Image 1 (cartoon, rainbow, N blue to C red):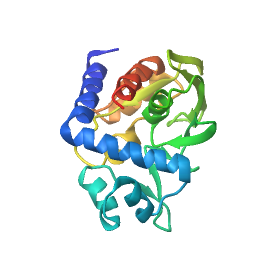
Image 2 (tube, rainbow, N blue to C red):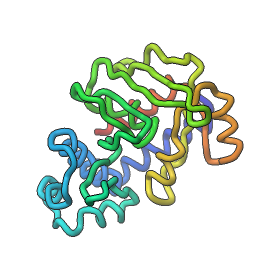
Image 3 (tube, rainbow, N blue to C red):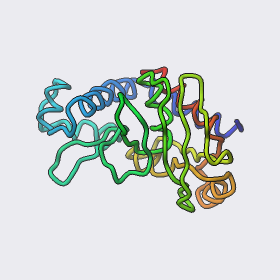
Length: 206
């Protein structure tokens, strides 16, 4: 793991262990549990789970730079874990195929939920080539293609999906990942195994 990727990893941990990060993680985990148990959540349903006023659910998350994903009817469908089947990153949680906002989500959440073998699928952000692997409590297995890489981004400066998730992707090889980093100086490039190690650090905070 190169020095800059290690810095980004430390920055992520610092974000989620800050006072706001701790509050956000607790609230986000409550929403994720609700999504997995109940499916899409109306703001009123989410408010009941969070013990917040219904008209403040979205705004409170927004104030913490974490805009919840909603569908056309205004129901909440994503908070890292997503019910939106249009998203390319998928994983197995509680026996169901679920989606993530980014490559880090599908590496991290299987560890959060202590999945023994979660099959993850995605695609190369540059070429569309399928990427698949199995996430276990000890690391990643059966990475196809074996040359797959992940880009990592800072998680500060705005909404988490804009500054982080939309930039944290799988690539079939390191070369297109490095090309993405050439066009976005904030990006780091790491192997899938290194990205799992970062995801495990975050999962251990839950």
